[in-house]
Length: 226
Image (cartoon, rainbow, N blue to C red; front, side, top):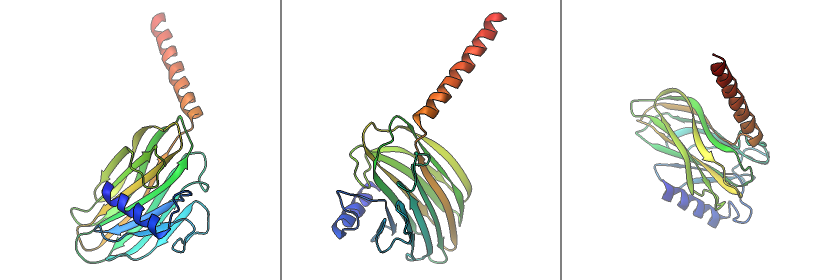
């Protein structure tokens, strides 16, 4: 999976879709490891005119519906969420397939926070259908950089939701990459999901820590009185 995303990023750089010196939010979609559709913010394939919003609407093989939107800075501010990937994908006929969606951006500068992955959605399809969400941050600040795995979560058919702690954010500019892998069992498959990477503000974490400390102190006093 890592090698595939490296190849996608390298191909996009050669095509000029994402200038290396000024990388912008970029979405990639590929089916069964084939040639990827690469769409960067503000390019011809982007259905949104808003800065920091990349929206793709395209058929890919047996996936007749692929409406995928990535949100990043400057559209999103404050880090909660830092990035958001929303997608609706429908396979109407055909055999088993794997659809991989990548979303990446660089130059994040929110430090001292705890990275969190959050996901939710619904998947309907035959036995064997599944979806996996993973996220990486890269201290090298490279687009689609896979330096450090924050976490991953997998789900089967039905409604799903979950969060994963991704550790502390880096102390210097970094990139973030989300990877979504949808596997179908063939036939009609309908998937809709929203996937976020968050960095709660350090001040919020400090307040939570203070509250826990105060709660512990009160309980200790009560025990001493008894």
